[in-house]
Amino acid sequence: MKALAVVLDAPKRLELRALSLNPLADGDVLVEIAWSGISTGTEKLLWSGAMPPFPGMAYPLVPGYESVGRVIDAGRDAQRRIGEWVFVPGANCFQGARALFGGTAERVVVPAARALPIDESLGEDGVLLSLAATAHHALVGGAPPDLIIGHGILGRLIARLTIACGAPPPIVWETNPARRDGATGYSVIAPEVDIRADYRVICDASGASALLDTLIGRLAKGGEIVLAGFYDRLTFSYAPAFMREARLRIAAEFTPEDSASTIALVEAGALSLAGLVSHIRPAAQAAAAYPEAFEDPACLKMVLDWRVAS
Image (cartoon, rainbow, N blue to C red; front, side):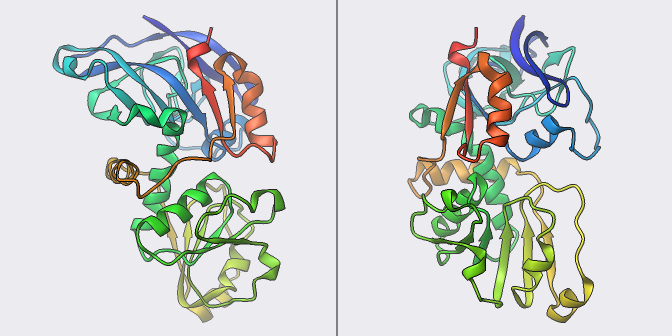
């Protein structure tokens, strides 16, 4: 059994290639992917070659952890799942390429528990559940943010989730004037017009590694900075952090509990994923879609359409 998949052979060397899939085990499902998202965090680092080394990191690899589709086959113990519409946060099912994170393909084999049932009416917006779960993970470890850095896709989801959880609307900093629109129920401003220096919790969704000194200077005493992006190396001046007794919290990757909670919020109507996908390209155009997703400021979220992959 084979499937077309996006394969990164090396930084900035990408092609669509047929790979053999592992056979279905008794507890596995085969998912035909309809849409998959391109992450401007981890996938950008994989694309550029800037991803810090960690276990499992090597080329060639199949990226992606933002896929939705339908279960079309299953092992003996998962037959009841056939026909379900599901969200797949990555897969590890390919022969001839590492799966990091393995979701960007026309079909994937995953354990049934990893295929999370969702409402088919979400359409391509369903790919945003990984980022929404990432945003949820950044929030559940402490108090909600009163300042969010960056009004990209992750910053918007953190802001929406903050409000969905009943917290006061946050302020969002955004340096790009073109990205200051699209806010519902919260304010997006240029950093230079903000004079506050008493924020209790600042959540960085920009991934910018040079911002720590600026953010520490805006904290109240005992305030916390939540790092929700993905970074190579971070440094900061100790004295200002010392005087504020600043705390740093790193939000790691989302958990199954984050995914379940996020799906529940979406299904209850408390969290909307609408209006965040800006670009959809046929999967056959993946080689052009990846640099566009990372380099075009107008691209908020790029989605590959696997229904027209070949």
